[in-house]
Image (cartoon, rainbow, N blue to C red; front, side, top):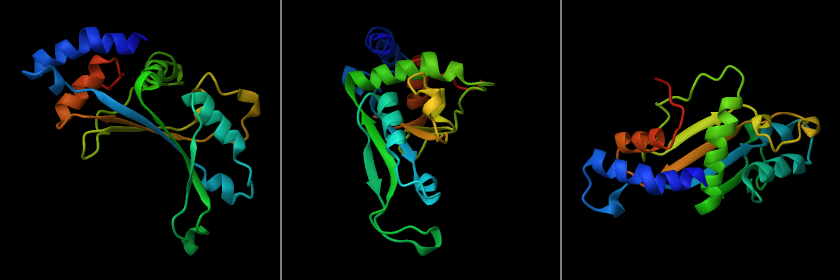
Length: 179
């Protein structure tokens, strides 16, 4: 895996010197990647079978997604308790690095009129969140079988405590941030 080897051999030593860290264990690293797909509109249109979306997310991530259920009913949204509202996958270890490598080197350059990803999408814990509008940009998804394209939210969880360390880590790994 290119990104994992790059992190171990190049990125971690560079971050240690750039951030002035004394211990190797203090170097920023990615802990996990979480993929979320909201299926609420798919269910509301009357289509109760979301197995195609589940299969697509399984192809994209390499593991079976977990179905997220509504915890309480909200009448304004026509949402009932225990109704399926989303699919979620958490990637760690080698599968996480394989997904990140595919995302950075294959999927994002493949997007039509790609304008880089924003540097402003860090949350309060300095994890990076961004949204892909159509899951059909992944090469694993069979284009002819897609009923309706769905978006995927991708969260990259880091163990850093500040914004500049998180941003520097992702830039060193090759994320295409806007200039």
